[in-house]
Amino acid sequence: MIVIVSSEKGGTGKTTISTNLTIMRAQKGVDVFLIDADSQRSAIDFSAVREQEGHQPSFCCAGISGPGTYDEIRKMSQKFDDTVVDVGGRDTLTLRKALLAADIVVVPFIPSQLDVWGLDRMNEIIGEAKSVNENLRAISVMNKVDSNPKIILGDEALVIAKDLKNIEFSGLTLGYRVSYRRSIAEGMAVTELSKSKKDEKATAEMISLYHEVFRDA
Ligand SMILES: Nc1ncnc2c1ncn2[C@@H]1O[C@H](COP(=O)(O)OP(=O)(O)O)[C@@H](O)[C@H]1O
Ligand SMILES: [Mg+2]
Picture 1 (cartoon, rainbow, N blue to C red):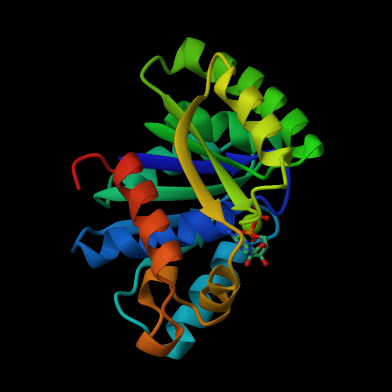
Picture 2: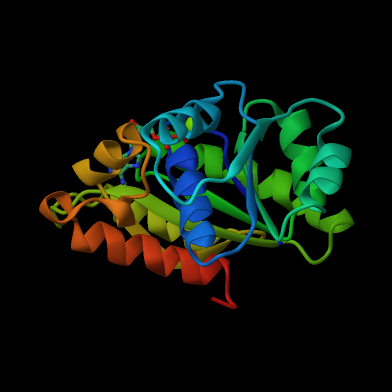
């Protein structure tokens, strides 16, 4: 299975989600490959930290971009059970090529007006990809959701996310939690934090996202 995690905007949680999904998949004994197709190369940096820290399970990670993206993803993914691709949306050629190779694309967005505009453009790009890659599944997840119910920005973003023609809102949200930042800095998935740092809410919501993406799990 080839999973793309992408959004037009930076900071929406692409690298957080793609690295967490990769590790959780590897924990199931699946041979999973993480491709960093974002010019920021954060997934590669994260993988280097994980390796330095010696956390297990380990996984392969490589960077790709540009016109060869489709062929490279297809070729490289054949050697693995599953492939997760972290794609920054601004390089639309890489994104468009990656979408043609994918089984599912996960689109994180944060509850802000600027992000919602980005979601509209992702909807268009994914619509075009679906006209060629007919079995592509596209889901969105709202990230960095404030726990304060008085903040209604999330509600407005949700209305728009639920209305998109080509991206289905998964119904899933990830809260704004320091444990996501802490785990990334340590080269870990949020589910791997040690007992004293464990965040049950973050763990539960990331597991829900995992099950939504890898439905067989
Ligand atoms: N749910 C969250 N709660 C708190 N911080 C988060 C959350 N998701 C991501 N972050 C932090 O926000 C920043 C951007 O996230 P990142 O995954 O790198 O986004 P992207 O890859 O889309 O640019 C990082 O510092 C990350 O640790
Ligand atoms: Mg990133």
